[in-house]
Amino acid sequence: MIEFKPDMSTYIRAHAVMTLFAMAAGMVILWVLGNPHIWTGAIGGLAAVALRGWYMADEVMDEVWVLNRTGLKGPYERQANLDDIAKLRIIAGSVQIVTKSGLKHLIKYQPDPKAVIDTINAARQKQAA
Image 1: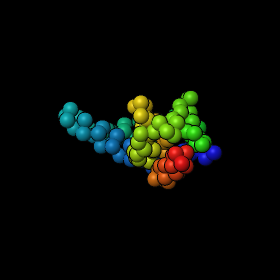
Image 2: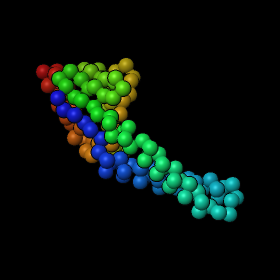
Image 3: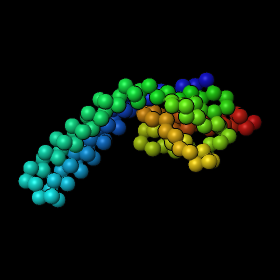
Image 4: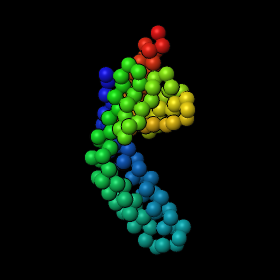
């Protein structure tokens, strides 16, 4: 049994990137609207992402995925059988699992998403053998 726990430094890094986009978007929106104080868009973007990050951190850090010999079990009763996985891919520090039926799950904020994919693929090959 292998656990994939979210990493706080990866969480913070993701929010830093979100902050840059939110700040830029806020400034562009105010510029387009003709507001002479476009710098307030940066403050608003920073505040919005910082508040979101602080509010969500406890909940997100509890989202642990467990890999056993038959599949992955995640938070909120999510699960994916190893033989039902169609695709695994990296999305911004997370691993997306796409099942053959089209369900999508995220193993969020992993410090090494490639290693997570390699571990899941090794379990899939072991089960197939």
